[in-house]
Length: 111
Length: 112
Image (cartoon, rainbow over all chains, first blue to last red; front, side, top):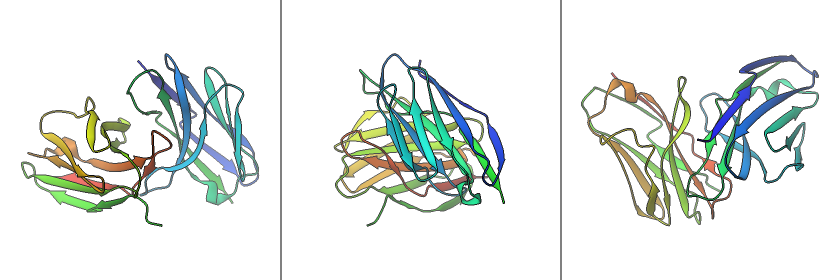
């Protein structure tokens, strides 16, 4: 069974304090790993897709990396507007199964 | 450019009533997904359609839940009869050829 575990559950940072969020996964084969951002009262917003170990993608202050067992979302010099819940999801290969989501990391960036 | 559209945004109903949630996917997308999000269970896939055909409904909780996609631009998720434990936020998402999924704003359902 596919499993996605995100840590920490919650993270509070001061503005400018860089950190990383972790997404550990177990799948029989990986078609892709997705990162989403979710603001309160809104639907998840797509950030990145990673397909193979060693791949990295960047967008503004965010950089996502992937290994064979986990993915990291690095946040460099965060701002209060980066506060949100960050969700990780895996898309297994070899079947019609779709995304399995982790429970998310709630990030709060204090001014 | 319109994203995924869901209606209603909020629904409050009494136990035993029928509830219908509606979704309009992004034009040109050929896959549509219905999710449920709760604090306890997070984001769970209920059912997904590919080219208007239901592919996997293994996430549908029980027979009280049903979903239809009569055409490429419209889908419904129906709960009949509704129960308090169905209270959650229901999201619709769409994608093109299995790519990244784009989510709607959700419907917050409260069953009293």
